[in-house]
Image (cartoon, rainbow, N blue to C red; front, top):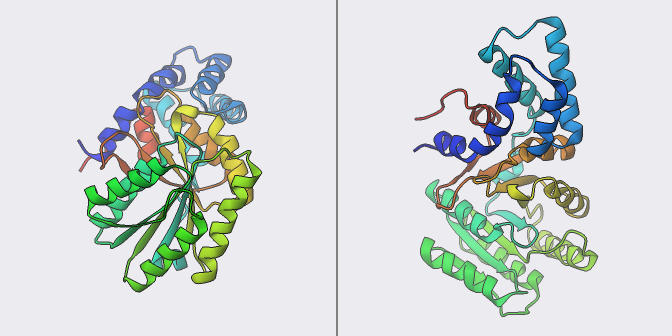
Amino acid sequence: MGLFGKLKKALVRTQAAIVSKFVSPKWDAEEMERALIAADFGPRLAAEMVVAMKKRLELKPLAGREDALQAAKEELLSVLAKSDAPMDAASLKALPRVILMIGVNGTGKTTTIAKLAKLFKDQHGKVLLAAADTFRAAAIDQIKLWGQRLHLEVVAGAHGADPAAVAHDAVTRAKNGGYTHLLIDTAGRQHTKANLMQELQKVKRVVAKIMPGAPHETWLVVDAPTGGNALSQAREFHAALHLTGLVIAKLDGTAKGGMVVAIHRETGLPIRFIGFGEGMDDLGAFEPQAFVDALLQTGSHET
């Protein structure tokens, strides 16, 4: 099964919750809005989409299912117009390309890092991992285990070590070792804890001092099942750390796929990757057209 097929499968529950409302012969605005909110499009975006659909109906009645799906597709794509904004050219050319990975506890951040590492390695990159989550000994062991499985080097410190010091050593190793990518794992933390946010800011300062311009990317990992809670996480982390993108994990098995649209609509942050399964290859670059086609169960992107 190709990536598009996996994405369609992951979004089937969200699709079931909303598509019938889009294509109902007796289109009901309140019912549509409730369905969108239930799928975690958020009250604001749900209301905007209902208004947009009303305007379409005033101009031209929907002729049938395909007409309705096309209208819904166009509305969703208009919201996601900048969700796959190109990455900064300097970031893409940087060697090594330093990517700081952050997120709250339980989002699947470390597994997502491993998937990204495999993806970059498969693209002929030389990838280094940094275990800067020194708060939990198990987190260090987990990164080391992924390193062994993927045959990648890992820079790690002792349990309780200064995360900024681990990041410093990792950047030095990446620069001297000819690496193309450095993925830095950090401790999961609640976005409301000021002291922990300051710790991340220190990591960024140290990394920038040893390599000007780094970290080139700061990505927040959010898990789709948290729905609307992911939005508050993104706002707080972005305010403190100037995020450059989002990675959506655990999209499979949830009816809250609308949060992907809502979180971009509210934050303006690009969505870099989405994870939709437990396999190491169940992660791909975010493409608005493919996402909307999968969400509405239209189109075919299989190769």
